[in-house]
Length: 516
Image (cartoon, rainbow, N blue to C red; front, side, top):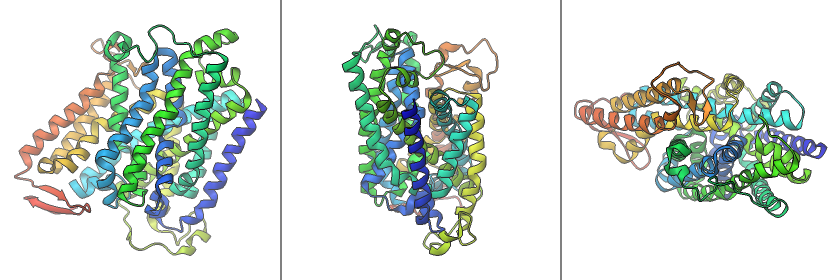
């Protein structure tokens, strides 16, 4: 245990140290802070995309779900995240990088105008509060298990660490550490599955393994939930503000695309071994006479079934990845609040004075967007803490975050790029409102969400039972799509549509006005 604690302390100190050190590269410029000056080379871009998929939220969710419900319940997380990166590489990375955006809602502003920008921003901020919370949950349990803190204290400690890391270096802080983190995560994941296989053997309970395709076809075996998880992450994560931050930060469109493909493959290579280990967890813990109880099964395994050096290696990779995701969640939402909700704009062709870095985090020489973005990190972090204390369930929070964006934000993005003839502002507004409200409505009416009890907000009723779990993930975006098409066709002549050229500049092609 001492070795594990020292290893975790070393990881925390290294991350904080690098975050503070690279803050000098921000130079008072919000473009440097939010998207690393649009200069990430391929190894950095790929590593930071991969790290977003391999945090404690996803890893603990993967192992907990696999051990409880089967391979496809947990593996759906890395599979869905890898699918998202692959689809993003195929269809979105190049055009989105080419537009020179700073935040994802910038696209909605250029294509649809100010009102859609604000609505998209609100949806993303709510979703990312859940994503941040999931990582704080995992961090809280980690400190509780290995350091001896209470869960409550652990959540606040991990939140404070991620907060400090974020306001110092922004995306630079992530980019300069994620290559090391990705290597540690890869070595730790493969070493863990090799150790378990050679010392305990891979034990697959009946009906729980990769070949148990009933988990994808039979509702009684959780098929609705498993497929919904893959869909929510594979499609909903396309409109993830932290993923797109990294796409915007790549040095050119080709680098952005290649980084997505490499990140997709790496997510599978690192994530799936955890699913295989989780399948054997029951037999391993039984042979050791250990009960997992309410603790995360991966933490129990690392604490009782593997040597401390391996536990420290695996936990180090998970903690470092959580820093990356937590940074992305806080940085992404803070910049969206400042830029897209607060409407703080800068001349992106003029950088702040280089000496601003010498004046501290809130130097008067920093541009206004940078200062407000850093200040907005405070309420965002506190909101994540609130959700983490109310809903201590990692896997559910991860998928719910992208479920909301899948329902409300994907259709206007995809059709705005690839079906501009019907992409009107009223269509975007109507589809975002109906999709999001449909998903949130189902959330409060169904007693469970992705297999977890809805302890956040549930309205008692006799219509929607637990058997309905998973189905709303498909209904809500379908509603969004149908409404978008109906309103788009009805308004494209009278209202007009806005077309984006190759560089993402807006032009009016039919009717309407040109106001922001």
